[in-house]
Image 1 (cartoon, one colour):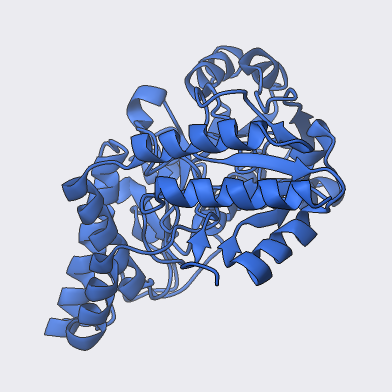
Image 2 (cartoon, rainbow, N blue to C red):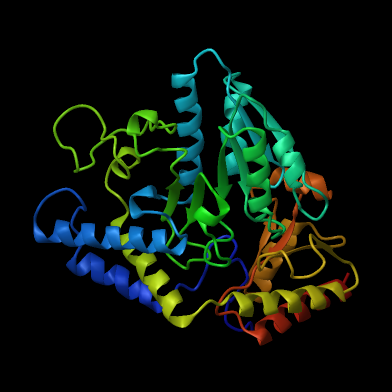
Length: 401
């Protein structure tokens, strides 16, 4: 009989969630679930306090200069869309005689690729795609070289969600600044915040997209966008991020114009307050219990060693654990990635992800398109014996071929 569910899909969303998350969300719904920022009664005030505590905790985590620069969103994809649409629309409003240009790379998630490609296909912008190498590394020099005097935004994932390869964003940003100081840099940190230290001031990041439900351990439907001074100056009249999302904010009730001050300028409508109650609890639990990243990387090393010893297995990405997140991408000769993932789920109660992981250009680069590969990603609660169980199952599958 299969043992307990072996969950190795933490790069998609972390599971199981800390018990503190479940308790906090239930408590919020039972006792504090007013509409934050809408109304002066106790429940509304308590809901607003929870949301603002989540915002300030996120700000401290990434060393944002002030909490107002952390825009709460519905997830990393929402954050990326808010940034890309906002910068492109802002540039079109301010520089109508100059066609905007954008830079992206082959390691990007479809949240970046599809959003920019839509503008490019419609002829609204020009876009350049910078390739990565077979290990998933983007050369900072090549990234910066793609920037022109018309480049309004340059997008770079902090780590590949398919390969786990961590990019040298500090060097890439430094070189972009030298080439065109006006270009805004968007960093997709979906795979790194909660795993690796991210300091937006030290890295000189303009826009940082954060997922709440991955490394941070929070619920789905939560995320944030850090908006730096260069993207949205304190002098709001010089903002380079235009928000097309309009609606209620609670801060400025009369009038038909959105507020100009952050965060309200970029936050319209009721936030996922119960989700942010859960995210706050997740971040507090992580701070109290310490980072699990060392544990996750030890499991990743065990995965790489074990899978690498099996006949018919091809591993992708970096050879060791240095410079990667806890992600292992592989294929088994003669078995399609999605079929292997489905078989592991149905027959072994093992959850992995097979396919292209919303990162099609990475798979084209490493030669696994269009079928993709299998991704295994351990988490904080994954045990060593479970990794050994997984390796044993794959070895048995390989031996049966």
